[in-house]
Length: 137
Image 1: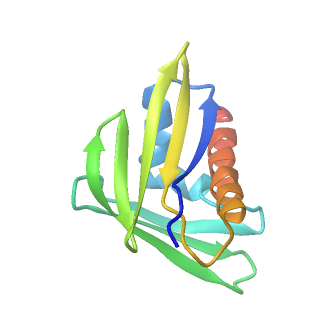
Image 2: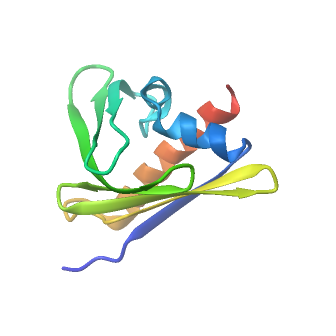
Image 3: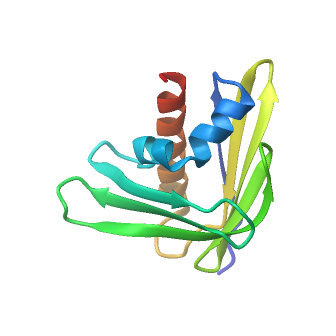
């Protein structure tokens, strides 16, 4: 079954450079990269070059479940956008400065195990965490 790509967005009250840095630097990724407060991201690495790997460990705080989000960059335009591939799926993240704020748009290929609305809500929750973290630091 073919699914349309899913898009989530957030307007961040920060300039594009700060937004890019907070989205791509491991010391920041571990502070926002989870969809629910009962989860966390204890570690992240990011080799930001075409062919480089991005790995973020996502775990339930109670230790009941966890997984590595493991992706390989296929395209990077520093400060503007990037695309990575994970398990045969692709995601593109775009940064657009609008009146001193930055719109972050994430477009990704859904997986087939979970409903589309569940996936969209999960990715939006992570992006909302990113917004909250970036704007508070």
